[in-house]
Amino acid sequence: MIIRLGRLTPGYFRLLQLQVSGELASEPKDRLVNHLALLLALMGLGLSYYSVRQMVQESSIPPSH
Image (cartoon, rainbow, N blue to C red):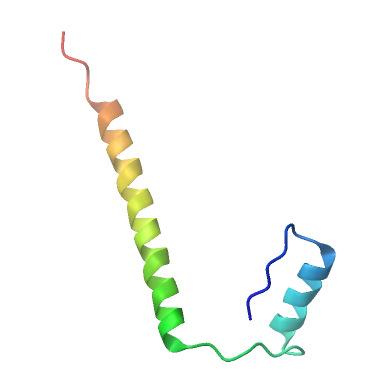
C-alpha cells in the first residue's frame, strides 16, 4: 500500500502504528518489488560509500609543490 502525503502528519504516524501492530493489514506485495527495492537500497549505500571514500582519499593526499 503506497500512501503519498505532502508532509508527515499525526494521522500518518497513527497509520504506521496500526500497520506495525497488525490491526491494519497492508496489501500483499509482489516479491519482485521487494527485491528491486533491496537492490536499489544496496546500490545507493554502495555509491554513497564509494563517494565518501573518494573524498577522503582526495583530502588525505598532500599537495605537491
